[in-house]
Image 1 (cartoon, helix red, strand yellow):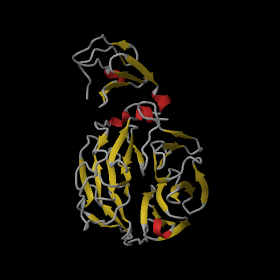
Image 2 (tube, one colour):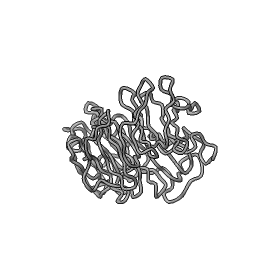
Image 3 (cartoon, helix red, strand yellow):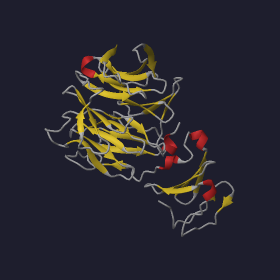
Image 4 (tube, one colour):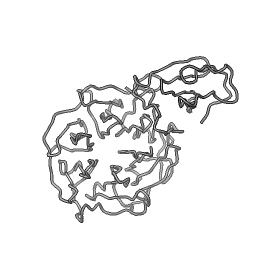
Length: 355
């Protein structure tokens, strides 16, 4: 929302200086697409193509370079008006903004977050405006379909892929009609699993599934054929890189990340010795891996060259969400984490989290 009624002085764009003590509105430089935003912490932020001016309270002005921080200049047109969804520390029992046992999460291109609640046996969607709705399963019901969802993946067509861990099945949920949920069928074939967990699809439609109970990675080809391509102990999740290689997490509960080829060749470990106890792995907008050490709660960003960084919160401290399974990067650069221990979903400002 636009920030008003605060006495401040602010640079608009690169060259123009607005007068101090502006009460009615910000002086916005339309040609440079400057935007003023106010988050829930009472911090006003002005984004410009040249950089970002961050004003906190009424007295401090800090300028950061978008290029240095790795931010998209236009912020992808998506802003979030929530910091936390759910009452942290309090378990939920049904639909709406409440959680019981958050597991893996994913995000679509519109910035909607999809959260698997294993305890409630359902998948919920959080919009950028903070609206929460159930999109798969019946929250709190033992008759839910799928009966035991652990993971969710947004497919290329916008539909959701949701697993049924103990049922050994995978379901496809229509993006336009959540009530339309069917067994995953690829070219007339229904793939089978022993205990499927996290999954991801390549651009050509090939699906890679971490079959936890079968101790392998399964490859589902677009023609419907499937095979086991990589044997590994207790795999939990997969993420397909733009090059076609696949990141997998395995070795639960002390899981690490390994990169494999589409044919299943082991290409080596990803991340330092600190990147352990990893459950889920996702990719950010630049193709770097995002993973959480469930013990420390630290969120790691790992580039293809092996360089890694620990993401920060708005206070400059390491983001710490102990027990969390998964993190995703929103289209505007924000980092969203499902806090399993505290039973809530948290958003961290991408301005500070970027590295």
